Length: 284
Image (tube, rainbow, N blue to C red):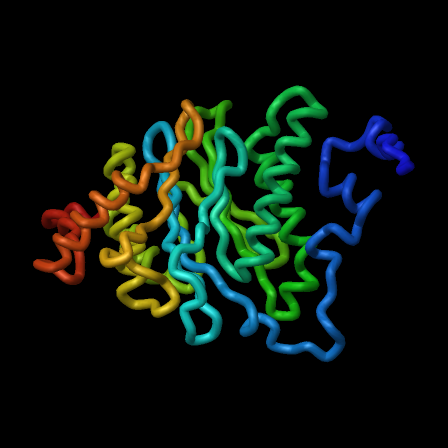
């Protein structure tokens, strides 16, 4: 007869960090503790990669959106991968980099936040959440140096300030905050150019969604690893809106209707909407 008793590690008062608990009691389960076969090089070309993620703030919240394409070398590995996930009730995380490791990191991050809430009886501050994700990225540095990098984007509604905030990272876990908009992934340069022209500090929630879709279209227009709206298969970007009411994913019918509008407008103006020029003497 098997011993059905709960292991003692689960009964002792412990840390509020689930990843620290795992590192102490079952370190082999942490994704970052795995190792590649000796002599393995170029591992990054053997695993699907995900791009591109965009996020913009608006008064009272933020929008994060991602395209659906995953690539492996010059091959499209998946057309409908999900790249934006809820982290908890008031925050979302988008993945860029090695898709398999990125999804595992997101799941560990979700458990990390839920574990903290259960142990401490309150939710972690937004800065605290950003720091916890930073630690998980730093722990993956060994895999990143072997070509399996994960560079997510984190964003959430700050309950203390009542604003949407966006955080970016490098492969070492270094975090930085972006005040208005941010992009990651291979199409990020093109998406960022679009956001620079279209973002305004008085965007409504609906306008912020449209700006994100326009930016993703521009990224797909110039970056082969970024997928545009797939009208034949009806595959569209994943879009999350985060406000004081929580994080909500837009339904497929809503995104599909907006994507149809974006593509329809591009039929007449392929380069997208024009940003208005300021009048004489207004540049300063």
